[in-house]
Length: 154
Image (cartoon, rainbow, N blue to C red):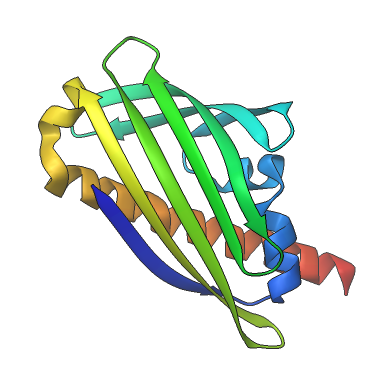
């Protein structure tokens, strides 16, 4: 399943890039993220709780930053396993940043996700809808966190 979205953030490309490389800060923006633990350089584990249809699921997720080109590109790979064995997933994500103005940055992300198990029975349409909703919540949370930081530092 391919998921792609674009959104803008009212901050500099440098601030946004540094923010996106900080797993703890990003974790606070992921809907349902309960914890983030750094386990190695550019690699971390997290617990993410979500609900798809009538099924609630908690995933143990391992994510690794494979490539980071300053102020322009971040590539990650990850995999997650539902704690009660309802399924698992693998993902590859590419995030591209583009400066639109001094304090305005465009984010384009594209994720290739494969889901196996009971959760996969919901099909692409429901899973894409859930992913799109979570993506919007994530984007809104990133904007809010960066706005807090900018307001605090002013």
